Amino acid sequence: MADALPYKPKPGEIPTEPGVYRFRDAQGRVLYVGKAKNLRARLSNYFAPLQTLHERTRRMVLTAASVEWTVVDSDVDALQLEYTWIQEFSPPFNVRYKDDKSYPYMAITLGDEAPRVIVTRNRRIRGAKYFGPYPKIWAVHDTIDLMIKVFPIRTCSDASYKKAMATGRPCFPGQIGRCGGPCSMTVTVEEHRAIVDDFVAFMSGGDRRFTRELTKRMREASAAMDYESAALYRDRLQSIDAVLQRSALVLSDDTDADLFGIAEDELSAAVQHFIVRGGRVRGVRATTIDKELDIAGADLVDQVLQRTYGDASADDIPRQVLVPVLPDDAGDIEQWLTERRGRRAALQVAQRGQKAELMKTATRNAEQALLLQKMRRTTDYTARTRALTDLQEALGLEEAPLRIECYDVSHLGGTNVVASMVVFEDGLPRKDQYRSFGVPETTDDTDSIYQVLTRRLAHIDADDPLTGSSVGAEAAPVVTVRKKPRFAYRPQLLVVDGGKPQVEAAARALRDSDGPQIALCGIAKRLEEVWLPGEEYPVILPRTSEALYLLQRLRDEAHRFAITHQRSRRKRDITTVLSDVPGLGQIRIKALLRHFGSVAKLSQATPEQIAELPGIGPALAEAVHRHLANR
Image (cartoon, rainbow, N blue to C red; front, top):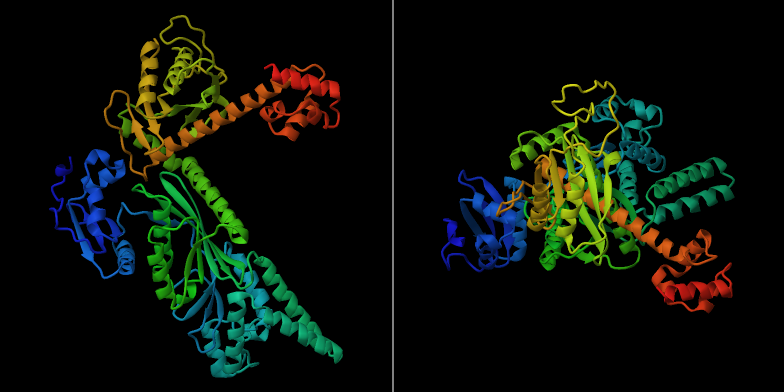
């Protein structure tokens, strides 16, 4: 089937040197950009038999009409060229980044004659030194207000500065004590530049020498009974402490690092970038990523680092870059970062200690961001409408599936088999209509799906859900009150968690029931394929499709509900086992489970060990041990 690609290069045409390759469509648009240490070895993977390719890779190579490559001298050059082409062409099959928002920064305009401190979202001010990003704009203003009490630098506009310097009259902020530049007529340009340097040095690392120096001056002024100066130094110390408390010390105070926490699923990923300077978190940036091809783990880290540092200045690259997993070309990326920084930059995995704890925090924030992104897409009316319309077109339905039911089966080593049914109406969950099923006797997942759907379909009738009267009945009573939502409501679409076997089992249940025919599909988790009954190949929805997000949300919700039900049943079963012991009440049962952790560990304990718990006497301990031994 590889011969079906007419643009496949002939054997020996592709070089074995490092380089960057591009797939183009018939119109010349760049579809995908990638790099390789060995171009021939990498590109041969794309021209393998089509049935062996990942579904989305297959779609990319079938959409393409040509492939071209550029040989470079080294792997580091390939890294740089790949980033440049991705930025230039924005290929649809490469990962796409979306910043959650435009973040505010604190900027010091070092390129000016008299630098000033400003709040800006513009990262392209020539000669400016940036600090941040900050999560909220008021946080930047509060930090500046505290800092200028210690380091009084210019805050006025360029127009005010020029006017003050031309007329010899202080600028208005200088008159009210809010500007410490030369335009306030209190310092010279050279003196002001020295204060700016101290401001930048403090913000770059929270330099403790300023605290020590101010403390020394305060004590000297106090000893000399110059209490006004001592009070001034005291106020400045309080301002420094307030700034330091805003960014708590999380690592050693000589640590400069960027830390990346990543959470991902099959369709998207969220990145939390913690900027640590002087051991303190100076800024946090959140980014979400839409994934088109199957990219995960190390490859995703590679793409994130390229995107973060591709246009970064040397000052923005720290000594350490901490990631959850090293990319395959970690050495090349480390060399690339070192060259861009001008001195050593290390790429490492945070494995233990405070850095590992901070990585856990960043990852937890990334997981929350990914969940929030899914929730926002689900609750957005426009996105929901588009999802239902896209789903109707993709599955060939006569109408948009306004009511969808999704089923999942959960078990523990083949025991305690349960199933869940979750309901979405208009693209939103209807938790009051969720149902759970126990499946006491079953052989496998497909049999469980068949049993559960057979039981569910037996409750679907031809009654009008609003009136309760049969369609076409001549003497039906008129009911004007809307009834409580019923289990009998008929869905427009049934979704099962699984691939072709699960879908065929569900289709068999539909055929064996005498009820109305309902549209059916399944979603397989590994490749996010959508399977239809009787079809040889799955339906592949674009990874940015709102319909796929809806199906994924349905599947995940059904899985969550099934796991929750199974855990509650296991807990109930455990309690039931112990409640059969005479004289053992709920309080003592909880105490036993809390102490031993599980019934399995309790059954391994001796009567003497059981009797050590307060409130458990020798006779009761012997009864508990005997009861568990005879199970």
